[in-house]
Image (tube, rainbow, N blue to C red; front, side, top):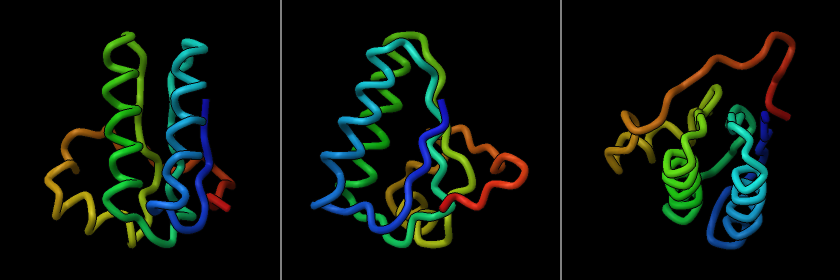
Length: 97
């Protein structure tokens, strides 16, 4: 299941993202989080992604990021989490918004 995320993924928004990821994983769905439209990512947003990855791994499900935007990449690099996530290209015709 492709989950398209747009805008700021911060302390205020992370509970919604975490809940949506959790629901998909509980439904036994592999998750691809399309990050092309993310304009800001803080540590809480990153935490939602890492927790989703771990939950998917625990259930033997796939979890990947698609097209991480320029605001996402430095946060992942600084936190040392870049290598945790499989990265996919966006689907043809998708912009992430």
